[in-house]
Length: 488
Image 1: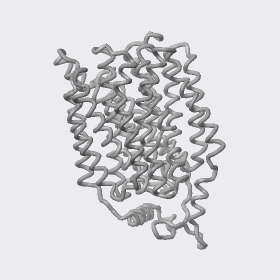
Image 2: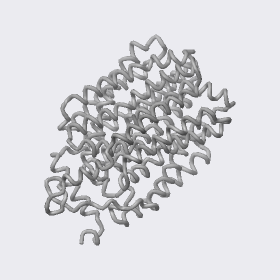
Image 3: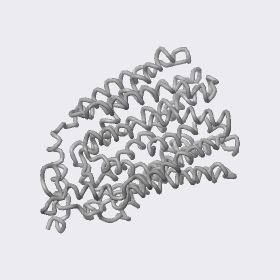
Image 4: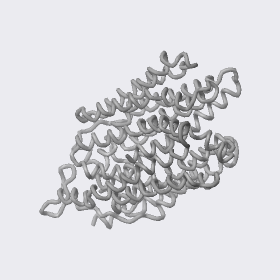
């Protein structure tokens, strides 16, 4: 439900945006901030949320996020001006950020058996595309038949019962029970065939989370400002330069505090394949978002389709994703993630090759429909196997921060995709204004290049290892990264 609501909160507003803008007399830049405010806080607070979930209760972190989403979504329908709606959208981003890492942490601890855990993570991952497509359809119906306010109130209708059910039925001590089950008579915890001391939960690391949160806020603000403020303005470059300047300070701080206290321990980047999987996770949402923003504006603008007609044309994305996610959840867990990820990339490259030629409504069935079906199947395979594999390569007591890192990569892909697609489209269409698809086609060639680069990274850098061997290496890396006083 967390992943579905996150996707729904954005996609439902695509068909509603023109009506909202008219209701509050918004200009183009202010319209953009309805999405940017949410993306800014959501992306920036994911790592903080993951750390909170790891050191406290993932259950109550999840419920707190749902409560914020439900209450604020209810209030948005009654706001009197555009400033209030933008501010509340930023608060919704914080609420959503609290739900994602905590829900992934709950999945990892609630389903300790690998097969069940893989199915749970696969289902969780697939909710994004389904939420995006259903959000477009439901948002179009609400906007056209009732009022745009129901795009927010629908979140309240789903969030309140989900929070109540979670409070009563999710066990408070799932994580402690799982750890206790692995503790032997010697007081040590089983991990990778070895025994090790039970890890401390650590503290919140206020300096670390503050540095990384400020860095992400500046970085996302710079990228999201580009399409409206212009890429050569100080509003874009000043926050981007500042964000990169803060990174060395964050890395230095994290390397000089105890590993169990760090917000994002440097040792995580040396876990087997973690860095490669993080890079892979940048792509899936970026691929889907490129299609959503390009064709929503094209179809409802120059092509003159209604919001409902546009949403119906997006159904192949959601249906194909839902079917393949269901199939992946039923099939046995992939013993060789690299092969499955590369297989997904083959399909993704095939689908991406068709997108630049989907010019005009008459080419929907010839190019766009097969591109979306083939590409979405491949994208889902990449996303699911990447999500499962990244949790296999990190310790369970880091599941919150692992989920936060995974979703930070996914959201980074969204932000980069929006910035690149809008920038390329606008630049090309300015030079070639005769057909609005010229710019979109160019942006899809860029997207194809990104897919090929990611596939090359996996081919060259991903190293397949035996599962037990991976766990042993994770334990070894963590031990080496631990300060000397902890080892004693």
